[in-house]
Image (cartoon, rainbow, N blue to C red; front, side, top):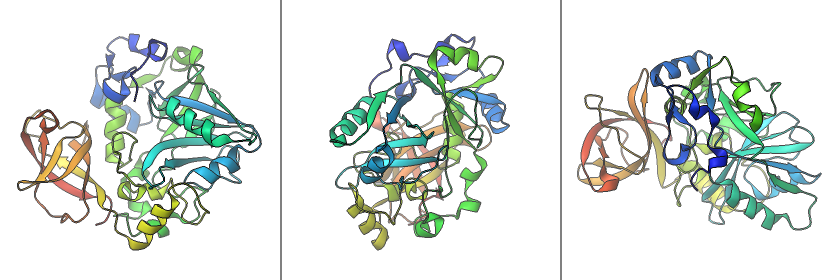
Length: 360
């Protein structure tokens, strides 16, 4: 993912106490001086998060939904105005390449994507458009994204995408019954049900005014709550080998009863066999040190590497936690260590207790 440009560096970084985020969230605030307080404010519905580094596409034309239906993993024909969903662009081998947060307003389809990925996605979409009646516009310079703890699809500010995680979307008739062989818990018991979330698109010129008088939360807070909810994120939980089954992404992003699309053969084959090679897990980390593993750090069992950390965070109640991708065959009671610094050739092992997300 490309580095943030000055055009997309958030003006909210000028807020007193703001500390800039690094890595994939560069361009917005990591926190505003009180990361645990910001988490609690989000849980209480009393804060808003600056996600203005996310890319935004607007698709218009009468063929837009049927065309996206034919090339991505979700069922999108007949998607009602204001109904939110997500869909994946897969490689021919079924690997996850792009994750699209998508809502249609009846006149256009609005899509938000990970920072730095909008150019690659737009280029691929243009190649796949052929002679269909679809127009693709990158409107990232005109629209910014705000995240907030709500499931309301209404906003006076602009289009709203409501996160469907962890339940089945209206577009996905299969729902949890079809994903039961992967999910460790049913939807009603899933920790993600406690995390209402939506993205509101606002004109970028109105971003500062849109948050006036509201408490701001940084990405430290949003990522900690995402980890708690077992919510996968492109570029962090995914690598060049990732397939949707490993990350429990069949819940909201894949329709198992639609026709052919790129990567569908792998989706169907792995679903029928029930054996994805890896699985997502939550790790509760030893909190006696101030260390925290980074993305890509090893997870080991004895002297054997059995996976890697994808996202680590300090949660206001759970303490240090991390999502990790592990070998599917690893026993659920295996003694594990997350090795902080291993991605840089160091070794600071932290005891890790595994909580199963995708059933082995």
